[in-house]
Image 1 (cartoon, one colour):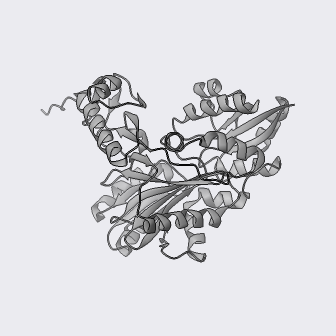
Image 2 (cartoon, rainbow, N blue to C red):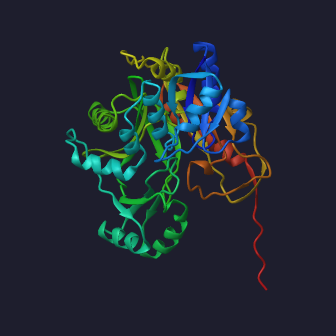
Image 3 (cartoon, rainbow, N blue to C red):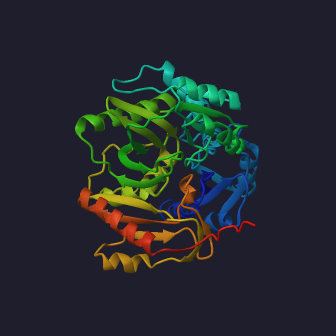
Length: 417
């Protein structure tokens, strides 16, 4: 039997990370890489040695996976839940093959935001941890009533989605009917509404195999909340940093201490920290790649694979090398992409070293300035610098230059007769 790692699901376009894990599995561990997805796409078979279809989500389907592995003469040596919907099946597979991983019940709570809020309310939280209430929304009437009960402003989200999908600020009574219709794809799995937190900065407590760091997050304003910038590590005063570190650790212990990767999203408020949501899988938006750039001798992907095999945590926190950031690129108007500038050339002209950058949209694609979730951007850039403030300035300058040089053909106005 041939040893293999099993990746369970992936979010959106993160197939590039699956391919990266395959290379690491081959090179560093001499193992094959298996990918489990709900529907096999053409890119999946190119990024993994074997692709298996199975139901994910709150009712995971284990037999098709174990049967396919047996037929392929593959023996799992590590289970890697890589999407929110893949977490429950990942926990079941880890238990079935007696590999490192949390209990399935904890995994369900990690996927279900409503269940997490109920557990949070019953636990003894640390000082400066500020729990949030969450009310189920199952009708337009309950949406209207809950918004009013929260003082006229609330934030509605699907209970089992990630990447800001379906997350909308409910600001006015007149918005409720349109929002309810927009949320139709998520109603069956469940919706919740929480207080709208406005006077706060977002961070994440990122964790892999015993190593933890804080990431500074920037999100769009308005009705939708899409993350457009991340910086690793987040520079913070000691007291506020402690609030966030304690909050992230509390969330981990609330769900499953014995789990290889976490991406716990947090609000930093004037008097403490609140949980946005807990994600029991690696962070998105290249945050682990930013960590590899920012810390000496630290590769989160390698650490995750090693933990999945052994269950061993890394006892020493990595040393800081500098600051790394990713900036998502936004279309400035709606229409069709006509011309995309050369990122590297613009960076050279500004005296900026572009570590990495790419476009996720191509010439001829339709784009919109109304970014509703993390999939609405047209590309990204990654920069690194020893000084945090210099990094911030350069991210702003290069993103501004790229967005200004992007040519978008405006949608033609509809003639009226």
